[in-house]
Image (cartoon, rainbow, N blue to C red; front, side, top):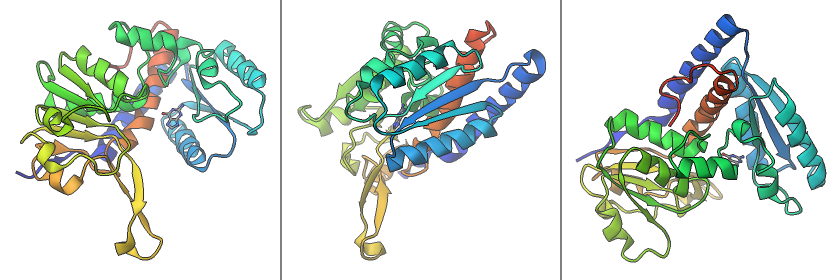
Length: 300
Ligand code: GUN
């Protein structure tokens, strides 16, 4: 069997298109423009790339983008002041504080200072609790993107066996909650799981989010399973020349694709979905703030 390749780049473009259409209707019918504020502290190169992409795609969707770039030595109190101002600003519907934050800042304190209704990352403790109890929450972008891809590819997920590999607060745990919400039978596996290959072999759906390059092998995969690879790992690629690197996922793509029914590639799979879902969350937050119906198909 050779797997269907799930094209995350194309799917994310479709989601961004749907968001842009909804934004245009909001402007036309209600004179409302959704606004996203992104806060970047310091000069982390990867974060700068993310923030630049977020800014460009927010504008492309017809939304307002507010960028706040602060020096690495910004005191925590100043950051909390900025969050308070953004909470109070009616033009701002979504707030994202880019992680990681410098060591002298308590990231949890800053995240939990964000108005939960504007927490488009879904990291605030209130949103974590709402998601865990099956209530209306802001949902973390990467797992939301994985859920959208799974629904798009499989239709109903009800009754399927899902194995999530990884227990992070940002991906593994919320992914498990979302799959439970769609009536999967969910196992959360991790680095201490005994007989990980045996556990993964039970799964109709595998979500790999461990951050270990090419760890999941083809003979761990049940024939026909759907494999969502969240990993983005940079590894040496001497075959491309000295000092060259390439991106790989947490799954060994070739061997997994030979057994799976469908698989997301790296790059071009889950990655592009994260910003698309950030835009979807900003739109959802804006609709909720204005008592308008939520966009269909763009929420959990
Ligand atoms: N850093 C890397 N990814 C993310 C993300 O999705 N949200 C935030 N806030 N920071 C990040």
